Amino acid sequence: MKKYAILLFISLIGAVSTPALAQEMVDQIVATVGEKIVLQSDVENQVLQMRAQGAYAGGDIHCDVLEQLLVQKLLLNQAELDSVEVSSSRVEQELEMRLLYFVRQVGSQKKLEDYYNKSMAEIKEDFRPVIRDQMITETMRQNITAEIDVSPKEVEEFYKNLPKDSIPMIDPKYKLAQIAVYPTESEEAKLAAREKLLELRERILQGERFSTLAVLYSQDPGSARQGGEIGFRTRQELDPEFAKAAFSLKEGQVSRIVKSAFGYHIIQMIGREGEQVNVRHILVIPEVTDNQRKKAINRLDSVQTLIRKDSLTFVKGAILFSEDQRSRMSEGLFLNPMNSDPYWTADLLPAAEYEAVKDLKENEMTDPFLTNDEENKEVYKIMKLQERTQPHRANLKQDYETIKEMLVAHKKEQKVRNWINDKRAATYIHIDENFLECEFLNEGWLK
Image (cartoon, rainbow, N blue to C red; front, side, top):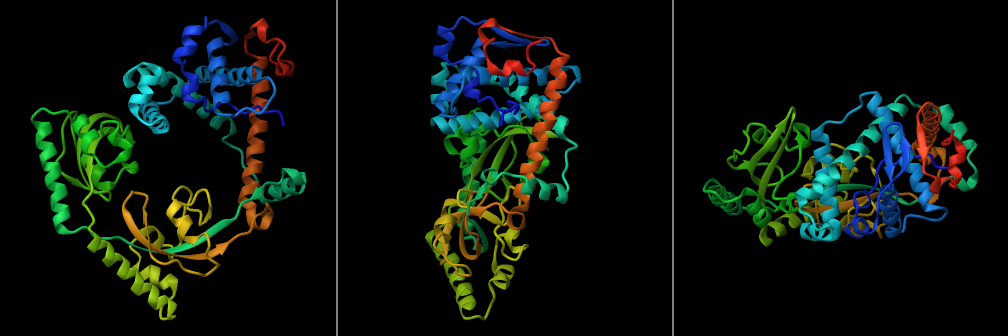
């Protein structure tokens, strides 16, 4: 199927010129869409990135990349006409998230800076407009397809008309229940954590840089390497106690010690935009001793013994004894936090959980095992395999939502295709003669 998919994510490393390419290329405009232009470097950078990632299967890669960029510029041009914008706070938040991902991929912030031979601040300046364009493009696509919905009858008809080789294979899925117990921190460990933060707070008040101390001492791996900075967040995206403290600060002010579900923090305000704040923080997590771990295991062993003796059902055990509130409220079901789905594929299950349950038969339990929760806190669990589906071709009974998503995606692609056809007919488009042999140009890009 010919792809009219919108280029929603030009990889940041590919979208900003690499040092080597910048030295070799004399840039030129290769296409114009309304008031938007496509540069030769835009095409070449994306080609290099796709090849480096092994993400291209065949055909003329330069032509395919150009088509994607033409569609993006068509969307951006219309967004400007329609006054579609994204807030600077959303752009900054997305920028921080993506740069954190790339830092993790290359190994360190210094390696990323060395790659571009630029400071992190300069890299952000390069990436910011790229991200803004991507976010506006995504917003335009959402606007175009916002009203699409499908009925059960349409899903059934769509499935009946699918060629067999287009019906996807569904991987095995696991439905799990859990009873989770946390090793409790001792009062001594809590006191030690607070004393450490008091010492760091005093050093900051006496002139040391908050960001430097965050890199050295914060136990939040996501923000520590960014000097403790978390990017713009709303109240709803933060722990309630953390949010309460963060939103009460003035610019540059450092909070007193704040206790959250993650541990203990001190927080410094960077800036506020409307209902979002950007802060730095230093997290210290009270140390858990081996004795506290043994107590947690013993509690789980006792619960498991009652279940094995049929003195207690697993569901009742989860309701009475599990310390994970989310699964406790759902009778022990271990739900995907992203979508509340109780069915997990092997690639989505956390590693420790997968290793514990992969060889179980249905209705069997694991022994207690150690893992980490969504907040990276140590937790011991016993899990029960309630159901394991077999690999199969998607069908309406087991995989209705999957088939529905396929139909919705198909309808969205059609809607966007029709939109592109309408808009390019009414938009000034010029393409450099070096690309005039591209096959897609016969579909209406040239007038």
